[in-house]
Image (cartoon, rainbow, N blue to C red; front, side):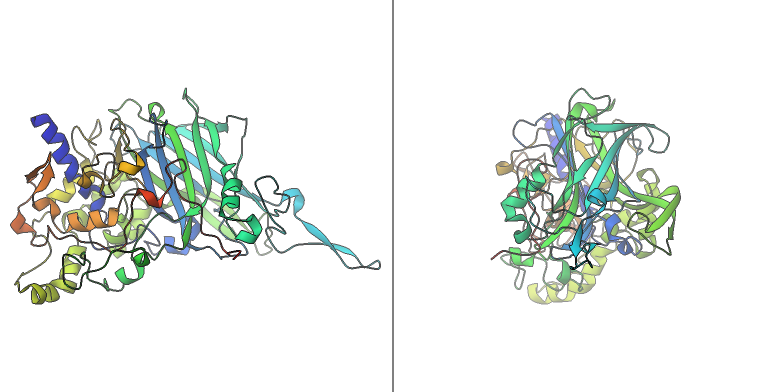
Amino acid sequence: MRKTFSKKALTLALVAAGIVSATAVAIASSHREAPNIARFPALDSTDFYLFNSYEPGRGDYITVIANYSPLQDAYGGPNYFAMDSSAVYSIHFDTNGDAQEDLTFEFRFDNSLPNGGVKLPVGANGMQKNVSVPLKFIGAISANDQSNLNFNESYTINVVAGAQRTGTSSQVMGLSGEQEFTKPLAFVGEKTFGSANGYQAYADQYVYEIDIPNCSMPGRVFVGQRKDPFVVNLGETFDLVNYVPIEAAAFPGGIEQNDANDDLRNKNVNTIALELPKSCVVGNGNGVIGSWTTAQVPQARLQNPNATFEKPDVSAGALVQVSRLSAPLVNELIIGLDDKDTFSSSAPSNDGQFADYVTHPTLPVILDLLFREPVNATLGTDYASLAPSNYPRLDLVAAFLTGFEGVNQQANVTASEMLRLNTGIPATPAQEQSAFGVAGDDLAGFPNGRRPGDDVVDIALRVVMGALCHNIPVNGEPTNLGFCNPDDAPVGNVPFTDGAPIDASYVNDSFPYLKTPVPGSSSE
């Protein structure tokens, strides 16, 4: 009984792992989270997911999803949303807990004009000329006919064993012999693709089975536009939390839960999705893997004064990391403004420099400044502060930086910010998942990895404001995990929320899981 308690109690404590990431109120994930990366949307990672695959029949696989290019308006033509052809987009895996990558999948993109580009004959009576068209397509596109495309975006994949810069790199091939893979055109509209089903049929043909070097089983990959799966009350949240962030049923004037509160409901993203055999990513560790995504660009980028399609600029020099993401909300709401760009360029092995932001988070204090007076007035209380007072916040440190023995602690323990997934915990079928993950008695969910249907915002809100100081149900019994006491967190048992619900029904139940993107135009 003691062993079961240890695993489950500590796993519940893990709610803080990405929750530290949230250290505050309802929030967006990492959309435009740092000053420098906000200037380069194609390199800006928005969300990162890591989970045991729950598509029926895929129990031996994990899925990892890295989304880029935030806040895409579906109608954003005529160029839409290509990846950066000078960049290297990477997904890293730490298999032994030393906070350094042991396996990295690198994605590189290239743009081309099919057959030199579409040209149309213009003119008559001997004055005719073939002139290049200004659009990326000139007619309808379907799964069976892409002849009207005037733009092609392709990518290659390499896998690096060992350190990314010095390890052994091998090319990932498609099972049908592909050396390059195609990223489908964005969902420009229903006239072009016929319907959402028409677009999906077109995009589905670019889900590839892949041969992974030194792996006895094939994997799958998809890169393309998807509906942004994250939900958040974005605008009002960053307007000094312009709502009462508590369930309306629990607090006078609290926020109602409904989809209208989701400011991302009409936004798309660019998705890099991999499904990989567990046996090929666990290495020699204990079955718990850590993972994160980065984007790198060459150190120097010179603009071509006579820019062309093939050469708008010239890039050279060593690769420099400009974007990094694993657990949600970290850079957005934990890291101080003066350190945000430093975090974007750093590696997990150097995360000790950011420890103060975890042990002494500022956003609970900001929430206290915003809401203490109205809370006291409404409830007739006299709280001196709404923020937890157990400094340093060891409840967050333990969960956020180290994981827990027997749950998601790796073979070695190195304090670092990564999503950690226990590959030995079976996936929960979509219809049985709790949006509250571990806190909802679903050990296969956040913060044991992160699934697209996990409500990381609400989980984060509740824990950062002190939920772990209060009793947590463990095997049906209310239990204090020993991090702190109820008196340390006066509102730690309050049902905080941003009013924007999410669950597994918001995404699909098969690879690549994320839904068909929002169309740029409706045919109705």
